[in-house]
Image (cartoon, rainbow, N blue to C red; front, side):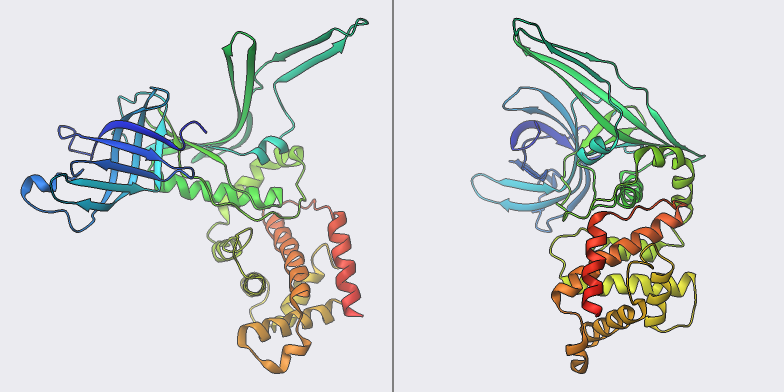
Length: 416
């Protein structure tokens, strides 16, 4: 994107100190971390004869900047700014860093506004999933092989998904057109999940809502998902783009819920999802602490999934039961109950494997699943957990795909 790997000049100030602005250079790296370099402390402690040796954190910093390469002006808000360097001598220099920064391509006269009421989430995955588009192409060739193509674009109407006293959620199509040179033109369409809030919220509060919506999309899409572009709108009407890029996630199996099924049931789906956040708090947090996360050991992921299912059964189905009985019960009430040839035997195998890796009981080593078996178990457990999530939001449609058929065949062979 145009903001990254660029240097900017500008002036910055902390809230309530608008009359004491600091001129500095700002750099945005390739993942959205921001570094500010200046010859003056942003907190101006040196004016009081106090060396800023505590490497203080600044809660929020405002700034207007100009890009070296394009000469365009921007407004920026930097949260959680840390001093990372200070040199003293003939030339004093200060450096600050923020990994939670936002930029607006406009001059924001109300930059000091710290409340927001809208968040927009965009991703290529969302764009591919939603079949609706404003493009209409006409391509043909004449008898003399003359190349002809026409491109008509009409912005689709927004798609309403959910409405209650707290939120309005809809899909918004944004299109931009450009003709940078005489023989080149382009139209770009972007698809956003828009979440508008009735209350004015802080950026931290909106990030919590973002996590809630993205976790639901993980379930609906059945793949590790996060937004690749995020925008926040202040209560004064200015859009700010989040600079920090999300960590890359591992790829997962694809078993998307059809968009029209989601669209037709979206009011109930969102209503149930918001309603059950407290009830399913640990179930949600524990599952997403490992699902799709890179660098998680296969064994740790397995232990987490088993714990997630064990606690879900205990809190929602039966208080007292053995781990084997809990797993058997969950499997028998899932869509794979006819796919596993011997559920009781497989539940016992999972229990032994959990005990071996959780308690290092060497007597179970030979009876536990090997690494390949754990990998297959993890894929199956993800299916079962996703299905529980879908049922919790009243979605009963769940298609068994070819890769799952092959997986259960492999598991059945290991049970023989």
